[in-house]
Image 1 (cartoon, rainbow, N blue to C red):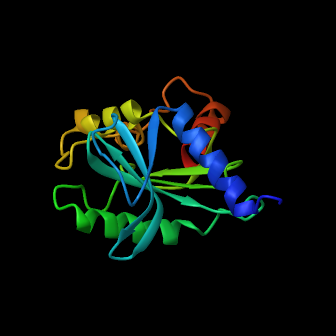
Image 2 (cartoon, one colour):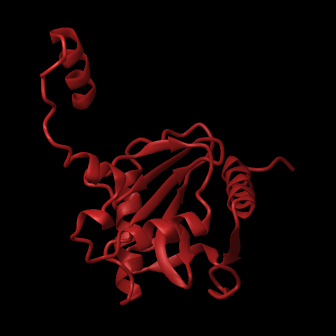
Length: 181
């Protein structure tokens, strides 16, 4: 009997998560201390069932929205947002809303970090390791207010204005065009 596209996608997603250090478990029987990073399939939250809920050091940090292969991932971020909010509400010590989301078909994967000043979805080759997400969370604590605790993208926005001294017009124009993209 042929495998359904949804099942193939889930198998690929499980494999990808495990390859990057996540312990994948079912919602009806899970242990958050089974590893540094735990991914729970179909975890029910107030806003629905997240395809995968991601926990690092026993705290929720994000979600994975799974789609079948060939389905477009652009626009799925709104669906991910409702699970990020619902999961954060169910765990009172969690950041609200959760800082990370993935949308994937098991072939193509998009990632959004809501720690960035202007969060946007981007293609990634695979899921990040739990230790990587933990390090990003340490760099940007929930009460981040000083420059040292900001993401790279946020710190780059605080660069001083470019001085024209010593630059030809075409050099200045090339640099300022890069800043706008």
